[in-house]
Image (cartoon, rainbow, N blue to C red):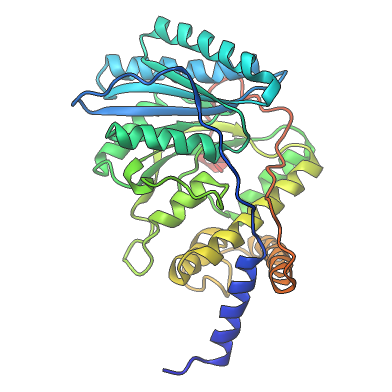
Length: 373
């Protein structure tokens, strides 16, 4: 069968984009278990996981975020809306902060005892959340956990969020991934602008995000390969089912499970964060099968953007213009990667571009659905 010239050109472009990112091999240190995971028995259990890190200013907010998990886990176990659950905290740190990481984990263990929640935790002398998640995946799969529930350290859970999230996961047969409904809050002018723009583009908002989601660890039994630095995006690509009546059947959002978070941050950092998101989109699309990548592009990254997703969803002229600008940025990033791949000068890393202030919202947000995402 002959391939059209356009198909061959798209294939070469996809190859060049894939070659435009080539991270060097990296030795990941073994986790230092400060509190070992409890021994598993035959009873069903859930692994609740929070990845975090040591910085000079985050101990109070870190403790507050993790304590809200303990509170909801304790209540869910007591009322039998959650199965037996173990809370695992990953404390990533720089080489000089090894002692501080251990001290914080010991303090969290003491706090967990007050709530009656089984606790374990490890220190990891490296950066990159996926590296910590791979440890949690290994523990969950070796112990045959029914699910892995992940909560990031900078969100605020609404009341009963974790029990509602598990209820939706159980209703789906404990298959795939279920994410909380996210409520985006703004702080500062750049954050408000980003929130407004995201409300019009609706980009990558219709699948579970790792800030608060539960999934079947067997779907990622081998862990996330080191090439991929985004956890929820990898799970999304693995679980997409293009060509079926509902490609998102294994990727659901739970309306009753809600959490709030601050969107964006300072203008310069926000621009870098958008660049990272678009880089990752290209890296994943170049690595996964074309049908999966095609649906991700049309149905998730640019939903309702004519002519990419013609017939999927109507959109307003303003929303179309916003998506067109975002698509132009997407094309520019793709061109950069393709050029790097063609010239043999690839990117070797995709940095996080994180924000200095990572505090979660101060109280649960009960806001109208119009403010979501």
